[in-house]
Length: 507
Length: 112
Image (cartoon, rainbow over all chains, first blue to last red; front, side, top):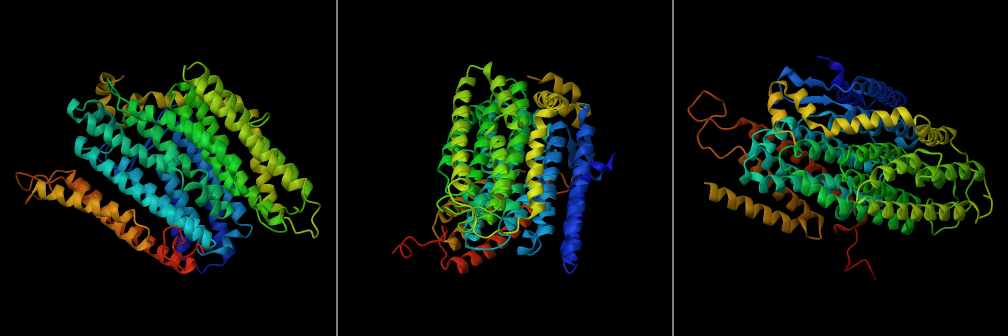
């Protein structure tokens, strides 16, 4: 058994716990420990991408208990992709925070590591209850990170965020209790077999449990009726925290992919059909609302929060078409949109600091210092975010449109997606012209943090590299999508002795 | 026993949801607590209700399902930590915002 598989959870967990115990250490050492651990995660993420790239599943049986009795970690292409994305994003956010924002509150680095541990655990686990536990770890770290820096706006937004997520956790447990009561297992692969073989009388209860799970993941992912906590929470958080939170909505999407394609995806009449039916219109509505919200925002951070919502809508609408092509396209868009939303949150902070007054509010007309540099950077970032060539957004959107063109419902997606992109284009052009053209040059020059600037430049540049490496990435993502569409392989890897049974109940 | 158990669950959930929809943070937290009690009981019942049976296979003719008991223990610990956190957060918000309304402003007093 290869113990490297549990390191993405253990490394940040141990670093975080040591940072809590040794909180008297000089701040520079704490910073260095956090950065070193996150750099380790980047290396582990790269290793995971290679290890899962061949298509085989890697398992880690905690305590060497065999599945389905013990807790199992399982690495496949999707998990590896999410691990690597989280690590790179976390590394950028942590470097940005280390330019000074981490000093504004207690225990930033410990909390950041716990957050990463929770995220990695959620991506690796093969057990539904374990997924709940890792959700709680990442949530409680995020509650504290959201409040980092203090202030009235954060307390107010934090209260909403915490309460809605606690209700979500209660619903998660209700769904788990129902599933366990019906099937007697919580291991995802075992659960998939049990659900597929369940007697007809249990179907309504199973469907109910699946819908409760959809609501839970919908709260995390921010689907339309459940997203109103997001703009306020994300725009109140400090910049590197908000940038890290760009991956949090994607955890919900990951959970939807994992649970609805695997656990409820087998059998004659799969339970997940109802979920896809609900997701499609809700995701389109989320996408439309994201577009309108981007146009109606009153500050750059709120605009970015609506960009996150827009990306969630795009992703879920594409995913709910459930074909290998659309899944691959959605995963490409997931990488692009996570990176761009994070870069925009950081850029909003960078530009806000250079304004004489108003920080990032649109209602205030104030000159921006270092107009040339920041204006060019904003121009490039805006092009990347809207999805114009030559950045990753263009490739991902073109792929989404191409993949959905074959579907009869795809035209709806075309219309809403392109309209939302137009609204985004208008909103960012308005921001750029009113910030950089309307006011005169700044009266006094403020120092521009070159480190922060370099990080944001690097993130935008990474987005530009995506299409340059388009072919290998798209090949990898196509294989990931195919792997997701064949849950039988997952079950065969997790429970080798039930291989024959798995083939029997395949759809 | 099942009827009594189901009624308890129902009453706890009803009270929890009602309190959760109130406008002040204290009642909302009480609602969350009641709801988490209901959820814990529900999770416990998912292993079926058995009286007087040990949770170890082989000690007696009938045995109780030990897994839900372990799940409930985990859920209780997590719920406990979350409640403690939300209480502190609500206190912090009440001090900073000068009222305990969930929206941070009292619609009757603040808008003059």
